[in-house]
Length: 489
Ligand code: B12
Ligand code: SF4
Image (tube, rainbow, N blue to C red):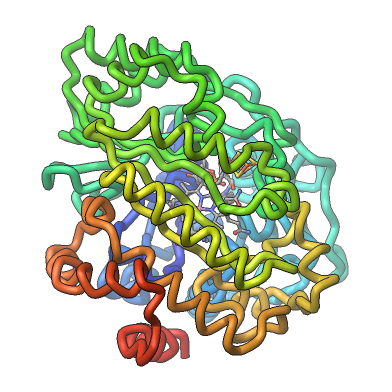
Protein backbone atom coordinates (compact mmCIF):
# COMPACT_ATOMS: atom_id res chain seq x y z
CA UNK A 1 0.00 0.00 0.00
CA UNK A 2 1.33 3.45 -0.91
CA UNK A 3 2.66 5.13 2.20
CA UNK A 4 3.10 8.78 3.29
CA UNK A 5 5.35 9.85 6.13
CA UNK A 6 4.54 13.11 7.93
CA UNK A 7 7.02 14.82 10.23
CA UNK A 8 6.63 17.34 13.03
CA UNK A 9 10.00 18.96 13.86
CA UNK A 10 11.01 20.02 17.36
CA UNK A 11 10.66 23.70 18.29
CA UNK A 12 11.48 25.38 21.58
CA UNK A 13 11.10 25.49 25.38
CA UNK A 14 7.32 25.09 25.09
CA UNK A 15 7.58 21.60 23.53
CA UNK A 16 8.25 20.02 26.91
CA UNK A 17 6.11 22.31 29.06
CA UNK A 18 2.90 21.45 27.29
CA UNK A 19 3.19 19.01 24.41
CA UNK A 20 0.61 19.96 21.80
CA UNK A 21 -0.95 17.71 19.23
CA UNK A 22 0.14 18.43 15.61
CA UNK A 23 -3.27 19.43 14.26
CA UNK A 24 -1.88 20.61 10.90
CA UNK A 25 -0.44 17.16 10.16
CA UNK A 26 -3.60 15.42 11.35
CA UNK A 27 -5.57 17.68 8.98
CA UNK A 28 -3.54 16.67 5.93
CA UNK A 29 -3.39 13.02 7.01
CA UNK A 30 -7.20 12.82 7.23
CA UNK A 31 -8.05 12.84 3.50
CA UNK A 32 -5.13 10.50 2.76
CA UNK A 33 -6.34 7.93 5.28
CA UNK A 34 -9.84 8.27 3.83
CA UNK A 35 -8.44 7.68 0.33
CA UNK A 36 -6.75 4.45 1.47
CA UNK A 37 -3.12 5.56 1.88
CA UNK A 38 -1.08 4.25 4.76
CA UNK A 39 0.01 7.30 6.78
CA UNK A 40 2.56 7.57 9.55
CA UNK A 41 3.26 10.65 11.71
CA UNK A 42 6.58 11.08 13.51
CA UNK A 43 6.42 13.90 16.05
CA UNK A 44 9.87 14.83 17.32
CA UNK A 45 8.30 16.16 20.52
CA UNK A 46 7.21 12.66 21.47
CA UNK A 47 9.59 10.10 19.91
CA UNK A 48 12.75 9.16 21.77
CA UNK A 49 14.87 8.38 18.71
CA UNK A 50 13.54 10.16 15.65
CA UNK A 51 16.29 8.95 13.33
CA UNK A 52 15.57 5.31 14.13
CA UNK A 53 11.83 5.98 13.64
CA UNK A 54 12.60 7.61 10.29
CA UNK A 55 14.77 4.75 9.08
CA UNK A 56 12.07 2.30 10.10
CA UNK A 57 9.30 4.43 8.57
CA UNK A 58 10.76 4.80 5.07
CA UNK A 59 10.49 1.88 2.67
CA UNK A 60 9.88 1.26 -1.04
CA UNK A 61 6.15 2.01 -0.58
CA UNK A 62 6.85 5.55 0.63
CA UNK A 63 5.57 8.09 -1.90
CA UNK A 64 6.84 11.25 -0.24
CA UNK A 65 7.74 12.81 3.09
CA UNK A 66 5.75 15.80 4.35
CA UNK A 67 7.31 18.24 6.82
CA UNK A 68 5.41 20.98 8.64
CA UNK A 69 7.29 24.12 9.60
CA UNK A 70 6.78 27.40 11.44
CA UNK A 71 9.22 30.31 11.35
CA UNK A 72 12.02 30.04 13.92
CA UNK A 73 14.05 27.28 15.47
CA UNK A 74 11.72 24.63 14.06
CA UNK A 75 13.42 25.25 10.69
CA UNK A 76 16.74 23.92 12.00
CA UNK A 77 15.06 20.76 13.18
CA UNK A 78 13.11 20.46 9.90
CA UNK A 79 16.28 20.80 7.82
CA UNK A 80 18.03 18.20 9.94
CA UNK A 81 15.22 15.70 9.34
CA UNK A 82 15.08 16.55 5.62
CA UNK A 83 18.83 15.89 5.36
CA UNK A 84 18.38 12.53 7.06
CA UNK A 85 15.58 11.59 4.65
CA UNK A 86 17.84 12.51 1.70
CA UNK A 87 20.54 10.25 3.05
CA UNK A 88 18.16 7.33 3.65
CA UNK A 89 16.42 7.55 0.26
CA UNK A 90 17.78 10.32 -2.01
CA UNK A 91 14.96 10.26 -4.59
CA UNK A 92 12.11 10.60 -2.09
CA UNK A 93 10.25 13.92 -2.66
CA UNK A 94 10.41 16.27 0.32
CA UNK A 95 7.18 18.29 0.59
CA UNK A 96 7.10 21.21 3.00
CA UNK A 97 3.99 22.96 4.33
CA UNK A 98 2.73 25.03 7.26
CA UNK A 99 3.17 28.69 8.26
CA UNK A 100 6.74 29.34 7.06
CA UNK A 101 6.51 27.90 3.51
CA UNK A 102 3.15 29.67 3.20
CA UNK A 103 4.55 33.08 4.16
CA UNK A 104 7.77 32.80 2.14
CA UNK A 105 7.10 30.22 -0.60
CA UNK A 106 9.78 31.10 -3.15
CA UNK A 107 12.56 31.44 -0.62
CA UNK A 108 11.61 28.14 0.99
CA UNK A 109 11.62 26.39 -2.39
CA UNK A 110 15.05 27.76 -3.16
CA UNK A 111 16.59 25.39 -0.59
CA UNK A 112 17.96 22.09 -1.99
CA UNK A 113 16.25 20.10 0.78
CA UNK A 114 12.82 21.33 -0.36
CA UNK A 115 11.42 19.69 -3.49
CA UNK A 116 7.80 20.80 -3.27
CA UNK A 117 5.70 23.01 -1.04
CA UNK A 118 2.02 23.35 -0.28
CA UNK A 119 1.00 26.96 0.24
CA UNK A 120 -1.54 27.67 3.00
CA UNK A 121 -4.27 25.07 3.62
CA UNK A 122 -3.19 21.59 2.60
CA UNK A 123 -6.48 19.71 3.08
CA UNK A 124 -7.21 19.57 -0.66
CA UNK A 125 -3.89 20.44 -2.31
CA UNK A 126 -1.81 17.79 -0.55
CA UNK A 127 -3.95 14.72 -1.40
CA UNK A 128 -4.09 15.85 -5.04
CA UNK A 129 -0.32 16.24 -5.09
CA UNK A 130 0.18 12.85 -3.43
CA UNK A 131 -2.11 11.18 -6.00
CA UNK A 132 0.05 12.64 -8.78
CA UNK A 133 3.28 11.51 -7.10
CA UNK A 134 1.91 8.03 -6.38
CA UNK A 135 0.68 7.58 -9.94
CA UNK A 136 3.66 9.25 -11.60
CA UNK A 137 1.40 11.93 -13.12
CA UNK A 138 2.28 15.60 -13.73
CA UNK A 139 1.43 17.75 -10.72
CA UNK A 140 1.75 21.16 -12.36
CA UNK A 141 -2.05 21.50 -12.59
CA UNK A 142 -2.54 21.15 -8.81
CA UNK A 143 -3.61 24.45 -7.18
CA UNK A 144 -1.83 25.82 -4.11
CA UNK A 145 1.56 24.18 -4.54
CA UNK A 146 5.11 25.19 -5.44
CA UNK A 147 7.72 23.22 -7.32
CA UNK A 148 10.93 23.79 -9.26
CA UNK A 149 11.56 24.00 -12.97
CA UNK A 150 15.26 23.86 -13.87
CA UNK A 151 15.99 24.71 -10.24
CA UNK A 152 13.77 27.82 -10.29
CA UNK A 153 10.76 28.13 -7.92
CA UNK A 154 7.34 28.10 -9.61
CA UNK A 155 4.04 28.60 -7.79
CA UNK A 156 0.78 27.20 -9.14
CA UNK A 157 -2.37 29.36 -8.85
CA UNK A 158 -3.54 29.84 -5.24
CA UNK A 159 -6.23 27.49 -3.97
CA UNK A 160 -9.38 29.03 -2.50
CA UNK A 161 -9.72 28.53 1.26
CA UNK A 162 -11.86 25.68 2.57
CA UNK A 163 -15.27 27.30 3.09
CA UNK A 164 -17.18 24.47 4.73
CA UNK A 165 -15.13 22.86 7.49
CA UNK A 166 -17.79 20.18 7.93
CA UNK A 167 -16.75 18.67 4.59
CA UNK A 168 -13.27 17.79 5.92
CA UNK A 169 -12.47 14.18 6.80
CA UNK A 170 -12.39 13.26 10.51
CA UNK A 171 -8.93 13.59 12.06
CA UNK A 172 -7.10 10.22 12.26
CA UNK A 173 -6.13 10.38 15.96
CA UNK A 174 -5.22 6.69 15.82
CA UNK A 175 -1.96 7.75 14.10
CA UNK A 176 -0.75 9.30 17.37
CA UNK A 177 -0.21 8.12 20.92
CA UNK A 178 -2.58 10.65 22.47
CA UNK A 179 -1.32 9.90 25.97
CA UNK A 180 1.85 11.83 25.05
CA UNK A 181 -0.01 15.12 24.51
CA UNK A 182 -1.43 17.69 26.86
CA UNK A 183 -3.05 21.05 26.25
CA UNK A 184 -4.21 22.03 29.73
CA UNK A 185 -3.52 19.99 32.84
CA UNK A 186 -6.63 20.66 34.93
CA UNK A 187 -6.87 17.36 36.79
CA UNK A 188 -4.31 15.07 35.21
CA UNK A 189 -6.85 13.66 32.72
CA UNK A 190 -5.91 13.52 29.01
CA UNK A 191 -6.32 16.89 27.28
CA UNK A 192 -6.18 17.85 23.64
CA UNK A 193 -6.26 20.81 21.24
CA UNK A 194 -9.32 20.99 19.00
CA UNK A 195 -10.11 23.44 16.22
CA UNK A 196 -13.69 24.63 15.70
CA UNK A 197 -13.15 27.42 13.18
CA UNK A 198 -10.46 28.90 10.95
CA UNK A 199 -9.51 32.50 10.32
CA UNK A 200 -10.16 35.86 11.90
CA UNK A 201 -11.78 39.05 10.60
CA UNK A 202 -9.32 41.38 12.40
CA UNK A 203 -6.00 42.79 11.25
CA UNK A 204 -3.60 43.02 14.21
CA UNK A 205 -0.22 44.29 13.07
CA UNK A 206 1.95 41.48 14.52
CA UNK A 207 -0.19 38.56 13.34
CA UNK A 208 -0.05 36.58 10.09
CA UNK A 209 -3.59 35.20 10.30
CA UNK A 210 -5.11 38.16 8.37
CA UNK A 211 -2.78 37.24 5.47
CA UNK A 212 -3.41 33.49 5.51
CA UNK A 213 -7.12 33.61 6.29
CA UNK A 214 -7.84 36.64 4.08
CA UNK A 215 -9.73 37.90 7.14
CA UNK A 216 -12.48 35.36 6.61
CA UNK A 217 -13.79 33.49 9.64
CA UNK A 218 -15.08 30.03 8.78
CA UNK A 219 -16.82 28.13 11.57
CA UNK A 220 -17.61 24.42 11.72
CA UNK A 221 -21.25 23.80 12.64
CA UNK A 222 -22.32 23.15 16.22
CA UNK A 223 -23.07 19.51 15.29
CA UNK A 224 -19.58 19.07 13.86
CA UNK A 225 -17.85 20.54 16.93
CA UNK A 226 -19.95 18.49 19.36
CA UNK A 227 -19.22 15.40 17.23
CA UNK A 228 -15.46 16.02 17.48
CA UNK A 229 -15.65 16.40 21.26
CA UNK A 230 -17.95 13.37 21.62
CA UNK A 231 -15.59 11.20 19.61
CA UNK A 232 -12.49 12.21 21.61
CA UNK A 233 -14.45 11.80 24.86
CA UNK A 234 -15.87 8.37 24.07
CA UNK A 235 -13.14 6.80 21.98
CA UNK A 236 -9.99 8.34 23.46
CA UNK A 237 -10.95 9.25 27.04
CA UNK A 238 -10.16 12.94 26.57
CA UNK A 239 -11.79 15.04 29.31
CA UNK A 240 -10.12 18.43 28.81
CA UNK A 241 -10.29 20.34 25.53
CA UNK A 242 -8.41 23.42 24.38
CA UNK A 243 -9.95 25.25 21.46
CA UNK A 244 -7.08 26.58 19.38
CA UNK A 245 -9.04 28.62 16.87
CA UNK A 246 -7.61 31.94 15.75
CA UNK A 247 -10.77 33.55 17.11
CA UNK A 248 -13.07 31.08 18.88
CA UNK A 249 -15.71 33.56 19.97
CA UNK A 250 -16.58 35.55 16.86
CA UNK A 251 -20.16 34.27 17.22
CA UNK A 252 -21.18 34.06 20.89
CA UNK A 253 -24.47 32.45 19.96
CA UNK A 254 -22.58 29.55 18.39
CA UNK A 255 -20.43 29.11 21.51
CA UNK A 256 -23.57 29.10 23.63
CA UNK A 257 -25.17 26.41 21.47
CA UNK A 258 -22.01 24.27 21.55
CA UNK A 259 -21.83 24.42 25.34
CA UNK A 260 -25.56 23.75 25.78
CA UNK A 261 -25.36 20.75 23.46
CA UNK A 262 -22.33 19.30 25.29
CA UNK A 263 -24.18 19.66 28.57
CA UNK A 264 -27.35 18.17 27.07
CA UNK A 265 -25.41 15.10 25.95
CA UNK A 266 -23.89 14.62 29.41
CA UNK A 267 -20.33 15.24 28.17
CA UNK A 268 -18.78 16.58 31.36
CA UNK A 269 -15.60 18.28 30.26
CA UNK A 270 -13.11 20.91 31.25
CA UNK A 271 -12.06 23.29 28.55
CA UNK A 272 -10.08 26.38 27.71
CA UNK A 273 -9.66 28.49 24.66
CA UNK A 274 -7.24 30.82 22.99
CA UNK A 275 -8.36 33.45 20.53
CA UNK A 276 -10.60 35.62 22.71
CA UNK A 277 -10.72 39.38 22.18
CA UNK A 278 -11.26 41.95 24.90
CA UNK A 279 -14.15 43.53 23.01
CA UNK A 280 -15.78 40.09 22.79
CA UNK A 281 -15.57 39.70 26.58
CA UNK A 282 -17.25 43.06 26.95
CA UNK A 283 -20.15 41.78 24.82
CA UNK A 284 -20.73 38.78 27.11
CA UNK A 285 -23.80 38.83 29.34
CA UNK A 286 -23.66 37.59 32.94
CA UNK A 287 -25.73 34.62 31.84
CA UNK A 288 -23.18 33.80 29.18
CA UNK A 289 -20.36 34.05 31.72
CA UNK A 290 -22.31 31.75 34.07
CA UNK A 291 -22.63 29.29 31.22
CA UNK A 292 -18.87 29.43 30.57
CA UNK A 293 -18.08 28.76 34.21
CA UNK A 294 -20.69 26.01 34.66
CA UNK A 295 -19.68 24.25 31.47
CA UNK A 296 -16.17 23.61 32.82
CA UNK A 297 -14.24 26.53 31.30
CA UNK A 298 -10.84 26.65 33.02
CA UNK A 299 -8.93 29.17 30.92
CA UNK A 300 -9.63 32.03 28.56
CA UNK A 301 -6.59 33.26 26.64
CA UNK A 302 -7.10 36.87 25.72
CA UNK A 303 -5.01 39.17 23.50
CA UNK A 304 -4.36 42.41 25.39
CA UNK A 305 -0.83 42.95 24.05
CA UNK A 306 -0.08 46.38 25.56
CA UNK A 307 -0.98 48.91 28.23
CA UNK A 308 -0.37 51.93 25.98
CA UNK A 309 -2.91 53.73 23.80
CA UNK A 310 -0.22 54.71 21.26
CA UNK A 311 0.99 51.13 20.89
CA UNK A 312 -2.62 49.88 20.68
CA UNK A 313 -3.00 52.16 17.67
CA UNK A 314 0.36 51.16 16.18
CA UNK A 315 -0.66 47.48 16.21
CA UNK A 316 -4.23 48.21 15.09
CA UNK A 317 -5.65 46.21 18.02
CA UNK A 318 -8.95 48.13 17.97
CA UNK A 319 -9.41 48.07 21.73
CA UNK A 320 -8.63 50.61 24.45
CA UNK A 321 -6.91 50.16 27.81
CA UNK A 322 -10.27 51.06 29.44
CA UNK A 323 -11.84 48.12 27.59
CA UNK A 324 -9.22 45.81 29.12
CA UNK A 325 -10.00 47.04 32.62
CA UNK A 326 -13.73 46.64 31.98
CA UNK A 327 -13.25 43.07 30.69
CA UNK A 328 -11.21 42.23 33.78
CA UNK A 329 -14.03 43.43 36.02
CA UNK A 330 -16.47 41.20 34.17
CA UNK A 331 -14.24 38.16 34.54
CA UNK A 332 -13.08 38.55 38.14
CA UNK A 333 -14.51 36.35 40.86
CA UNK A 334 -15.01 33.37 38.59
CA UNK A 335 -13.17 30.07 38.71
CA UNK A 336 -11.59 30.68 35.30
CA UNK A 337 -7.88 31.36 34.76
CA UNK A 338 -7.44 34.39 32.53
CA UNK A 339 -4.34 34.33 30.39
CA UNK A 340 -3.72 37.90 29.25
CA UNK A 341 -1.18 37.77 26.43
CA UNK A 342 1.20 40.70 26.38
CA UNK A 343 3.81 41.83 23.86
CA UNK A 344 6.71 44.17 24.61
CA UNK A 345 9.50 45.62 22.49
CA UNK A 346 7.53 46.89 19.51
CA UNK A 347 9.52 49.08 17.09
CA UNK A 348 9.64 52.55 18.60
CA UNK A 349 8.25 51.46 21.98
CA UNK A 350 9.97 53.19 24.89
CA UNK A 351 10.98 51.54 28.16
CA UNK A 352 8.43 53.74 29.93
CA UNK A 353 5.74 52.22 27.69
CA UNK A 354 7.01 48.71 28.45
CA UNK A 355 6.76 49.51 32.16
CA UNK A 356 3.20 50.77 31.60
CA UNK A 357 2.28 47.36 30.27
CA UNK A 358 3.85 45.73 33.33
CA UNK A 359 1.86 48.20 35.43
CA UNK A 360 -1.36 47.25 33.65
CA UNK A 361 -0.68 43.56 34.34
CA UNK A 362 -0.13 44.23 38.04
CA UNK A 363 -3.34 46.23 38.19
CA UNK A 364 -5.31 43.45 36.49
CA UNK A 365 -3.75 40.83 38.81
CA UNK A 366 -4.68 42.85 41.87
CA UNK A 367 -8.34 42.82 40.84
CA UNK A 368 -8.35 39.25 39.54
CA UNK A 369 -6.08 36.70 41.27
CA UNK A 370 -6.89 34.14 38.56
CA UNK A 371 -5.12 36.27 35.92
CA UNK A 372 -1.68 35.48 34.51
CA UNK A 373 0.43 37.29 31.98
CA UNK A 374 2.85 35.75 29.49
CA UNK A 375 4.91 38.66 28.16
CA UNK A 376 6.47 37.88 24.77
CA UNK A 377 9.06 39.98 23.01
CA UNK A 378 7.64 41.27 19.73
CA UNK A 379 8.85 39.13 16.80
CA UNK A 380 8.61 40.52 13.24
CA UNK A 381 7.07 37.54 11.46
CA UNK A 382 6.99 37.78 7.66
CA UNK A 383 3.75 38.76 5.90
CA UNK A 384 2.46 40.68 8.90
CA UNK A 385 1.41 44.34 8.63
CA UNK A 386 4.14 45.45 11.06
CA UNK A 387 7.00 43.64 9.38
CA UNK A 388 7.98 46.75 7.37
CA UNK A 389 7.86 48.93 10.49
CA UNK A 390 10.38 46.57 12.04
CA UNK A 391 12.63 46.85 8.97
CA UNK A 392 12.37 50.67 9.11
CA UNK A 393 13.57 50.47 12.72
CA UNK A 394 16.69 48.45 11.91
CA UNK A 395 15.55 44.83 11.66
CA UNK A 396 17.50 42.99 8.96
CA UNK A 397 15.34 40.15 7.65
CA UNK A 398 17.08 36.83 7.02
CA UNK A 399 17.45 35.95 3.33
CA UNK A 400 17.41 32.17 3.25
CA UNK A 401 15.46 29.31 4.80
CA UNK A 402 18.20 28.26 7.29
CA UNK A 403 18.66 31.87 8.39
CA UNK A 404 14.96 32.25 9.29
CA UNK A 405 15.62 29.74 12.07
CA UNK A 406 17.16 32.68 13.89
CA UNK A 407 13.80 34.43 14.08
CA UNK A 408 12.82 32.17 16.96
CA UNK A 409 10.29 34.03 19.08
CA UNK A 410 12.31 33.12 22.17
CA UNK A 411 15.63 34.92 21.76
CA UNK A 412 15.64 36.19 18.16
CA UNK A 413 16.92 39.58 19.34
CA UNK A 414 20.13 37.92 20.48
CA UNK A 415 20.89 36.82 16.94
CA UNK A 416 19.48 39.39 14.48
CA UNK A 417 19.72 43.17 14.10
CA UNK A 418 17.01 45.16 15.82
CA UNK A 419 16.15 48.47 17.46
CA UNK A 420 16.68 47.57 21.13
CA UNK A 421 19.77 48.68 23.06
CA UNK A 422 21.57 45.85 24.96
CA UNK A 423 20.19 47.16 28.27
CA UNK A 424 16.63 47.33 26.92
CA UNK A 425 16.93 43.86 25.49
CA UNK A 426 18.20 42.41 28.78
CA UNK A 427 15.29 43.94 30.65
CA UNK A 428 12.76 42.61 28.15
CA UNK A 429 14.22 39.11 28.40
CA UNK A 430 13.98 39.24 32.18
CA UNK A 431 10.36 40.36 32.03
CA UNK A 432 9.62 37.65 29.46
CA UNK A 433 10.94 34.81 31.63
CA UNK A 434 9.57 35.92 34.98
CA UNK A 435 6.12 36.85 33.63
CA UNK A 436 5.48 33.24 32.58
CA UNK A 437 6.41 31.95 36.03
CA UNK A 438 5.08 34.59 38.41
CA UNK A 439 1.36 33.79 38.64
CA UNK A 440 -0.30 30.63 40.07
CA UNK A 441 -2.77 30.18 37.20
CA UNK A 442 0.08 29.29 34.83
CA UNK A 443 0.47 26.01 36.75
CA UNK A 444 -2.15 24.12 34.76
CA UNK A 445 -0.05 24.60 31.60
CA UNK A 446 2.66 22.24 32.89
CA UNK A 447 2.10 18.61 32.05
CA UNK A 448 5.53 17.49 33.24
CA UNK A 449 5.48 16.83 37.04
CA UNK A 450 9.13 17.82 37.49
CA UNK A 451 8.62 21.14 35.70
CA UNK A 452 5.48 21.71 37.79
CA UNK A 453 7.49 21.19 40.98
CA UNK A 454 10.18 23.61 39.77
CA UNK A 455 7.43 26.10 38.93
CA UNK A 456 6.00 25.81 42.47
CA UNK A 457 9.43 26.36 44.00
CA UNK A 458 10.45 29.26 41.80
CA UNK A 459 7.11 31.08 41.48
CA UNK A 460 7.37 33.22 44.68
CA UNK A 461 10.74 34.59 43.56
CA UNK A 462 9.48 35.19 40.03
CA UNK A 463 6.52 37.07 41.46
CA UNK A 464 8.72 39.23 43.66
CA UNK A 465 10.92 40.09 40.71
CA UNK A 466 7.98 40.84 38.42
CA UNK A 467 6.10 42.92 41.00
CA UNK A 468 9.09 44.98 42.12
CA UNK A 469 10.73 45.00 38.69
CA UNK A 470 13.84 43.65 40.42
CA UNK A 471 16.04 42.05 37.81
CA UNK A 472 19.49 42.61 39.27
CA UNK A 473 21.62 39.43 39.31
CA UNK A 474 19.07 37.52 37.26
CA UNK A 475 20.84 34.17 37.59
CA UNK A 476 17.80 32.09 36.62
CA UNK A 477 17.62 33.83 33.26
CA UNK A 478 21.30 33.20 32.60
CA UNK A 479 20.83 29.51 33.37
CA UNK A 480 17.76 29.12 31.13
CA UNK A 481 19.43 31.01 28.27
CA UNK A 482 22.66 29.01 28.60
CA UNK A 483 20.71 25.74 28.49
CA UNK A 484 18.76 26.93 25.46
CA UNK A 485 21.80 28.08 23.53
CA UNK A 486 23.44 24.69 24.19
CA UNK A 487 20.37 23.00 22.75
CA UNK A 488 20.42 25.33 19.74
CA UNK A 489 23.95 24.42 18.69
C1 B12 B 1 -2.64 26.43 18.21
C2 B12 B 1 -1.48 27.36 17.94
C3 B12 B 1 -0.43 27.32 18.81
C4 B12 B 1 -0.39 26.35 19.98
C5 B12 B 1 0.00 24.96 19.56
C6 B12 B 1 0.80 24.85 18.28
C7 B12 B 1 1.12 23.44 17.88
N1 B12 B 1 0.23 22.52 17.98
O1 B12 B 1 2.20 23.21 17.46
C8 B12 B 1 0.62 27.04 20.92
C9 B12 B 1 -0.19 27.82 21.92
C10 B12 B 1 1.60 26.14 21.66
C11 B12 B 1 1.32 27.99 19.97
C12 B12 B 1 2.50 28.61 20.29
C13 B12 B 1 3.14 29.49 19.48
N2 B12 B 1 2.67 29.97 18.31
CO1 B12 B 1 1.07 29.35 17.47
N3 B12 B 1 -0.54 29.04 16.60
C14 B12 B 1 -1.50 28.24 16.85
C15 B12 B 1 -2.64 28.48 15.83
C16 B12 B 1 -3.64 29.44 16.42
C17 B12 B 1 -3.37 27.26 15.33
C18 B12 B 1 -2.47 26.13 14.81
C19 B12 B 1 -3.34 25.07 14.28
O2 B12 B 1 -3.63 24.08 14.92
N4 B12 B 1 -3.86 25.30 13.10
C20 B12 B 1 -4.78 24.40 12.46
C21 B12 B 1 -4.11 23.60 11.39
C22 B12 B 1 -5.15 22.79 10.67
O3 B12 B 1 -3.53 24.54 10.52
P1 B12 B 1 -1.98 24.51 10.15
O4 B12 B 1 -1.17 23.94 11.22
O5 B12 B 1 -1.60 25.80 9.60
O6 B12 B 1 -1.99 23.42 8.97
C23 B12 B 1 -2.58 23.66 7.71
C24 B12 B 1 -1.64 24.28 6.67
O7 B12 B 1 -0.66 25.11 7.22
C25 B12 B 1 -1.08 23.12 5.95
N5 B12 B 1 0.07 22.41 6.50
C26 B12 B 1 0.60 22.46 7.74
N6 B12 B 1 1.65 21.64 7.83
C27 B12 B 1 1.80 21.04 6.66
C28 B12 B 1 2.74 20.10 6.22
C29 B12 B 1 2.66 19.64 4.92
C30 B12 B 1 3.63 18.61 4.45
C31 B12 B 1 1.66 20.12 4.05
C32 B12 B 1 1.58 19.60 2.68
C33 B12 B 1 0.73 21.07 4.48
C34 B12 B 1 0.80 21.51 5.78
O8 B12 B 1 -2.17 22.23 5.91
C35 B12 B 1 -2.88 22.29 7.15
C36 B12 B 1 -4.34 22.06 6.90
O9 B12 B 1 -4.89 23.05 6.08
C37 B12 B 1 -1.83 29.14 14.67
C38 B12 B 1 -2.63 30.03 13.77
C39 B12 B 1 -3.21 29.24 12.65
N7 B12 B 1 -4.34 29.65 12.21
O10 B12 B 1 -2.68 28.25 12.16
C40 B12 B 1 -0.76 29.87 15.45
C41 B12 B 1 0.58 30.10 14.79
C42 B12 B 1 1.02 28.85 14.07
N8 B12 B 1 1.47 30.32 15.94
C43 B12 B 1 2.32 31.26 15.74
C44 B12 B 1 3.24 31.70 16.71
C45 B12 B 1 4.00 32.97 16.36
C46 B12 B 1 3.42 31.03 17.92
C47 B12 B 1 4.43 31.37 19.01
C48 B12 B 1 5.80 31.69 18.48
C49 B12 B 1 3.84 32.47 19.85
C50 B12 B 1 4.74 32.92 20.97
N9 B12 B 1 5.31 34.07 20.81
O11 B12 B 1 4.91 32.24 21.93
C51 B12 B 1 4.44 30.09 19.86
C52 B12 B 1 5.62 29.15 19.53
C53 B12 B 1 5.17 27.79 19.09
C54 B12 B 1 6.30 26.84 18.78
N10 B12 B 1 6.33 25.70 19.44
O12 B12 B 1 7.15 27.11 17.97
C55 B12 B 1 2.23 31.83 14.35
C56 B12 B 1 3.32 31.27 13.45
C57 B12 B 1 3.89 32.31 12.55
C58 B12 B 1 5.02 31.75 11.75
N11 B12 B 1 5.48 32.54 10.84
O13 B12 B 1 5.49 30.67 11.92
C59 B12 B 1 0.76 31.43 13.96
C60 B12 B 1 0.52 31.24 12.47
C61 B12 B 1 -0.14 32.52 14.57
C62 B12 B 1 -0.11 33.84 13.85
N12 B12 B 1 -1.16 34.13 13.15
O14 B12 B 1 0.82 34.61 13.91
N13 B12 B 1 0.63 28.16 18.82
S1 SF4 C 1 -4.13 38.60 16.85
FE1 SF4 C 1 -6.03 37.49 17.09
S2 SF4 C 1 -7.62 39.06 16.74
FE2 SF4 C 1 -5.73 39.86 15.92
S3 SF4 C 1 -5.75 39.30 13.72
FE3 SF4 C 1 -4.56 37.71 14.83
S4 SF4 C 1 -6.06 36.13 15.27
FE4 SF4 C 1 -7.22 37.98 14.80
